[in-house]
Image (tube, rainbow, N blue to C red):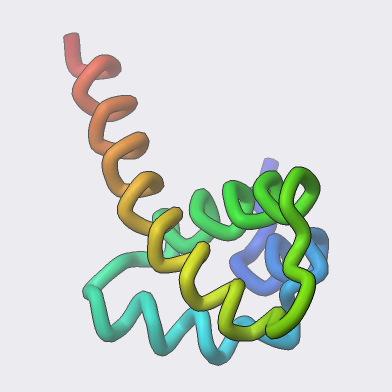
Length: 84
């Protein structure tokens, strides 16, 4: 079974318009597609609890950058546990 693409995750989370910005942020900080997918899911979860009220793009930039770090951490922890 094939996994959804990065674009599909951004469509499903309603952030498709911000995909170019997300790609730029990930490139600037050297994050990969796997981390971007995990991060956009985390951003979506946060948007359900604390939706952006003023500047959606600035909110996304801040939260996505934060969630990229969390995503990398979560992925590394998961891979580490799987090796044991």
